[in-house]
Amino acid sequence: MGLKMDDFSEIQKRSTRMRLWELPDVYVLEPTDSMATQFLSINRSTGDLSYTSQLPDSDVPHAQIVFGLAGILRLVAGTYAVVITGRQSMGTYRGHSVYRVSSLRVLPCNNNLHRATPEEKEEAYFVGLLKALESTPGLYFSYDVDLTLNADKFQAAAMSECPSIWKHADDRFLWNRKLMKELIDKQMEPYILPVIQGSFQTIDSVVKGKAVTVTLIARRSMRRAGTRMWRRGADLDGNVANFVETEQILESQGYFASYTQLRGSIPVLWEQIVDLTYKPKIKTINYENTQKAVEKHFDDLHKRYGDVVAIDLINQQGSEGVLSIAFGESMLKISNNHIRYLPFDFHKICGHIHFERLSILYNQILEDLTKHGYHLRDQDGNIFKEQKGVVRTNCIDCLDRTNVTQSLLGRKALEAQLQRIGIFESTNTVAQFEALEAKFKFLWADHGDDVSIQYSGTGALKGDFVRFGRRTIRGLLQDGFNAAARYYLNNFRDGNKQDSIDLVAGSYEVGGGDSSRLQITLIETVALPGALVALIAGAYFTSIAGRQLGSDVYQYLYTLLLAGVTGGIAAGIRSQGRYLANRPRLCKTV
Image (tube, rainbow, N blue to C red; front, side):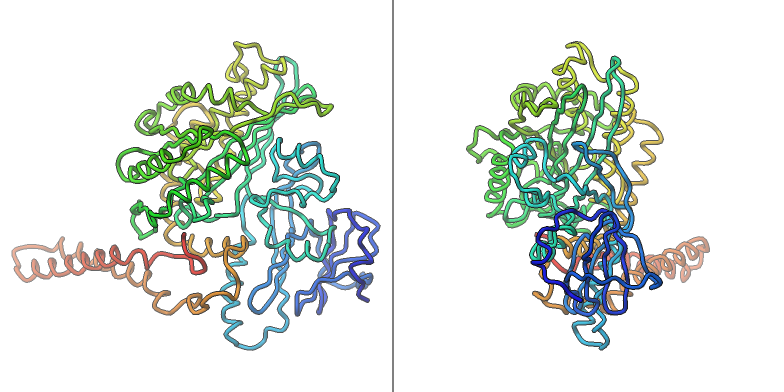
């Protein structure tokens, strides 16, 4: 029998392990880690949520252990529940366990779908996107601690008496913010589980006989989430693509120290739409609103983090030059002494192997870093220092050059913290301690790979330098492979992936747009494969004809004709590349 929500207002304990019963009419989630007498029921026809006190007989099949309910998603004609079916323990954060989602499962609640209605056809496209949702990388959660808040924000939230970890969460970093909404509205506290996308890595070492733990957390913003080419720059509200907050934490001798950095796309309005070329043209758009977007972005950062140093690592000449100019001009117009803009042409100064020259950049911002400081408290909760500013780093993708630079700043912060708590002397560096040095390099390299995979589909470039402190032949070859993989994913896979992200993030309002654009026509299905087959066939027959050239004029003309047709096909693919590539259908890029 169904039970009223009010009957369970006292239930607060979050379920960490549940048995999923799949009955013909309902799904039932039964907590197995407590003496619960009421269970969550999800109607398989309507998706409605309720509590029930009845469980099926033990001999009913299709019972599966799950580790959390990520939330509920209502689409045009059906409802879908997203459950966590696999988890991996990654360590602890503030004394509480942190898990990585190793597998998700989408449960359809659409038993009423049995007719070929327009709504069902539209639903079919969304269901395909939900399949991609099940393989979303880099999802993390904790049952007992809020992963969305860095040390300074966490300290403020800790002053509250509210026991619910989601109520003070930074909603920028809640991957399942939209999915949790119905559970929150119905006050189903035991089943509300905040999830972030990003990275969580921990290393342990011993320095001078003292145990040292370093943790690196990445928190990806969902406000302009997306893929590498389909989410660039800022929107009109100042939210930027690939915005990630990285917090490096040191725990030793009863001390807790934290240092936070930011990365995010260049906050002007720009695009780089895929068109089957290796490096599509960068184009600034909606120029009249760029200044407002830039100001909104940095006003928000200043309110949240204090002073801001914006490091721009892009090339100041060439194809990236148009952005360097636009960004620089906009920053000159910002009249805020707490925001500093610093262009640093990474490739010109460091080239492809001399990354040690980043010391030039470090010396330029040393005074700012000292002023910003870091968070430091002891085991009794006494706060000795608070971070009062932040460094925001960007390159074009905010992946490769950015991660190399952030790893240097993280290293310097760790050295300062170890000195402050008395483990390091003033002359000590991380590099002097072999075990810590090796683990620290891999920590940041893995961090860069995690962030890169979520945005570009591959690990970060230049990862060998972060791992080993130098460029290697293997690293250069890996960069070549990753660059090729990025080209393939950007052009042929990321459009659908972008739609999947927009659907989960709530960027697309289901039922609020023209559904006709969701229908994939026959022409769209065969256009690119047909063009590529024609191009390959043309090149093949042209090469055969060319090898048979002699004194025969007709053979010569025939070869020229084949070459001309092949060239025409290639030119046609090039001119129509933007329309032949896999592109998103739900939302505009800006």
